[in-house]
Image 1 (cartoon, rainbow, N blue to C red):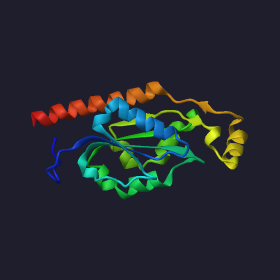
Image 2: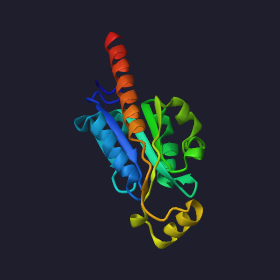
Image 3: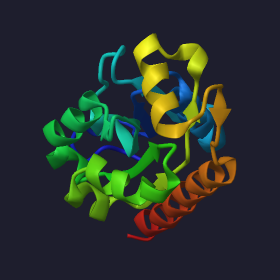
Image 4: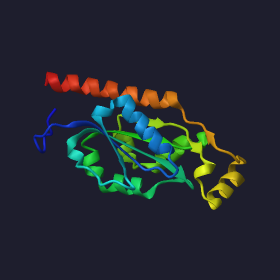
Length: 180
């Protein structure tokens, strides 16, 4: 498939994420494996230079919630590139431990128009990784949750379903593009 803007061959998936303690990074890498490593580019928004968004067919954006908010770089990326993102197929995901408020956190994390435009939304649970937290983070998590050791509540089924939905959407649009 060729880019309408540049005439160059499009890569399939760009997975953009930010991870504070490593959970979202592991999810991004798992998504890359499920979508096909050869078809995916994984970029940490805190460390890597942003590639040209026009070179990708589908852009997947994810982050995690800390102190009730998604990482500011994820939020700023979404706002700064909203115009391009609204002209691409996008998927959004969130890692968050508080299942009772997860959907609310998701809707607060991403701009409303991107949520409405996204072909799939993912809520994957999360982890408390005390071994990766500083003293203050451990104290806050212990006080708010009562948890004192590493806990993982990642929903691998939700991650797999998210990737399958992206692949199905991609296949559907590839067939439509071929027929046009």
